[in-house]
Image (tube, rainbow, N blue to C red; front, side, top):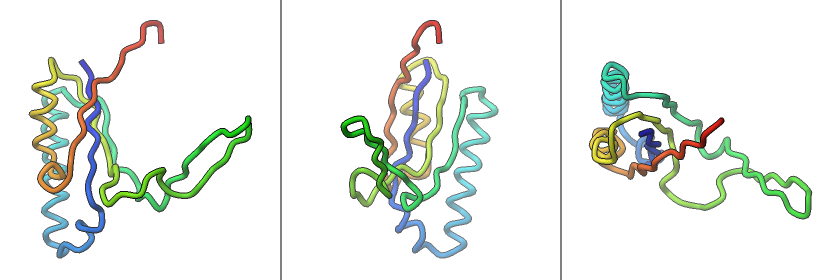
Length: 118
């Protein structure tokens, strides 16, 4: 079963860390990524640019309307994701708990729907 692990954290908190702590944090991410690559559980994963680069799209009366930034104002933002292929939710939760941002933010675990014929 495939699961999406959405990484929700506070980028301002990370920015206030000393450089050596930031490097350590990123080292943990690299180690986690390597571990799930080597186990064969990683399908995909990427960090995302900051919310200041986001564009929100809405269609109103047939017209495409775009606005800068995220739809909702919040301290925690989606900073990246992993897609993993694991036997069950328990394993997805176990992996989510090892993502560094789980200690200071949240990791949302969502099963991915598989639609036949696509």
